[in-house]
Length: 431
RNA sequence: UCCGCGAUAGCUCAAUGGUGGAGCACGUGACUGUUAAUCACGGGGUUGUAGGUUCGAGUCCUACUCGCGGAGCCA
Image 1 (cartoon, rainbow, N blue to C red):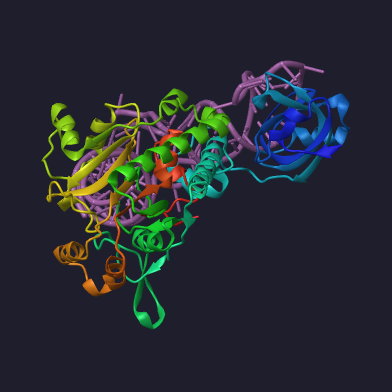
Image 2: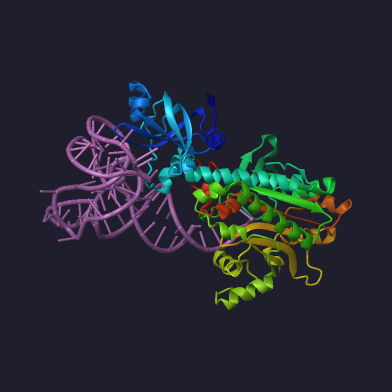
């Protein structure tokens, strides 16, 4: 008798093994009890027949409540009728703890009820699948950069001021320094890293105190931000598409079962192969106007505009060369058209909207100073950042990808609150 | 912050201004192959809060609280 996991049952057909887990669901009919066990690696139907166990064990199996913890020992059988394709013929069952009445029943629940019980909700199959895919995505992100000569470069979470000077920040007291702000982006620090290491990536949590109430916003979310010295806008876009293709294909290869639990249309993900379409802001505006949407040239795209652009393609789209007014101060001015900035957004397919924002950075000291003044930012706070343009400034570029939006898109999940273990939103700080 | 919708059993919902119900969950029982099992029986309610209209309010009116959906902002 050996202990194993449900995910490993396929290697133990015909053998007697022990599983330890929790009761996901059960049914019984007279002399048979079907226990669906959950052990964190999958689900397995454990069949308890009255004649194969003691009287006490049979009674105990019959009265197990949802989410009670228990272990079973039995013979592994291939069984196509069963969840996961395998089944355990139980010879021994041991109760660990009889669970109290479990609030999340197999029927429907409202979002508030579930969110209040997020610590339990993550045990359900759909949430489990989403978070397994989240892990796969994060692992792919690290693999991608680690295997291409990037150095992980952690940016601080406490910062003295805003990166872009616009978004509302979370403020917290900081000894005698007055206030510290929770970072809204590690990018400026990432640029310093790129000048030291060539290619780096910042990967950590970021915070936005905006009172956004949409399916695409969290107040605390994770972002990966690569930054590369001697990169221009085109090289940046080459890296973006190679990166996104890699992540999607890794999930398809390693997390197919989880995608199936989520009933994700896999053909849509299989189509995510290079090259991705690249269109300029001007071309994107043409698409929007052709579809008759009311859009004023020079504005940033709203959610319906992003959907309109995205639905013309079966892959993510990169929109580049933006009017400089709608983009951040650090983006490089276009040499051919000084009213434009060398920014690029990637819009996910199927109307999921923006998952990446990036740019070639302004490397000219004077132009950058001018931008900082135009945006009325405190010049002194950016002195260290301007040093990067004083001492060996080079063309460089980078981008930031929101992990939760990416998970949401790849999983086909409507709202980002289900793509992180404990979502933080406006009006949601618990549990 | 703005617009719209909602709050009734543990959960999801129903109830023409006139005695608040169902399904699930829970409890008891039946059944050797169940797949959100099925069947029988049972317990379960200060209708979000405060006020008002009315002979009578879950239902109509006002305010508040909380939530949901969308917009703006963004990843």
